[in-house]
Image: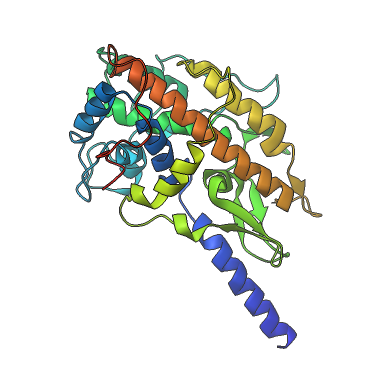
Amino acid sequence: MDASSANLFRLALAFLFIAPFIQKPLAAWDAEGHELVATMAYGRLNPKAQKAVTALAHEMENPDQAYDAVTLACWMDDLRKNTAMPYHGMFLSWHYIDIGLEPGDPPPSLDPGDDNEVHGNVVQALKRAVVVLKGGTDPYVKTKAMACAMVMHLVGDIHQPLHCATHYFRASGGSLHHDAGGNKEEVLNGPPGDAKFNLHAFWDSAWRASFDDASGCVVLDPRYQEQGVHDPQNVRSLAEALAQQPPSPGTDLETHIDQWARESNALARDFVYRELTATESKKYCRLSSVYVSRANTLARQRLVLASWRLATLLNNTLGADGPINPPPPYPAGSPSQP
């Protein structure tokens, strides 16, 4: 193979590796990531909470596929994609919060009051949804079913480090800018001239990412590639394996939403950004094999922690007065067993 053919082959190979990263900004954990959280959380719900989540899921509309107690966690992302759904295009900023990495960065607003269907952040959104889940009302979260869908999705989102962090910097003219939670931080995948993806997109799928030493590229496990319709069965085996790796003893599982955001922000500051390797031109960054391996481990830990906290929240609201001890994971007839 001559040099020209080798370069074309290398570029084609790099595109195959990067293609799964081509997605819209603000996607949060990919659909399978949210299904992992929901599947693990469902296994920890008491029967009363399980019954309530299942009933609420059936109230939510999607012209392409009916929701169950697992796929309901994808409703907020489905709103971005499906123009036929009620509330299409709304709540886009409710998935994240721009918290800076340095003490002097602009402070975010954490409390509901200055948000609506177009403006807001994940901390405000979760606080609103929890109020409705407890039986209260909210001008934007119209029903308990809607609140349940939001909680199931946003508890996952708030545990993705780059949904609670952004890098502020001064442009040459002195104006303050930020990288939109890594969406504007380009990562070079492979040798110079090869494909690129943004840092946020990588972290959305880091739980299924690995590093291919032969090509020098990040690879996503094709077993969990997003399909046209939601299929929780696709992640069931991984959910069962991850469910055997609970959070560390003493981990706070109660609904402390502000603290969840600060926790993710600290991970972004101390690892996500700090451990990046800049290219020689400083224009892009690279992800080393060590970085990708650590990111994969951390992302899976965050998904597990999100599932435990989600289960605690749902048991304390929808499952209040139910059995104290949750049933064993994945009871017969659960919606994660279609």
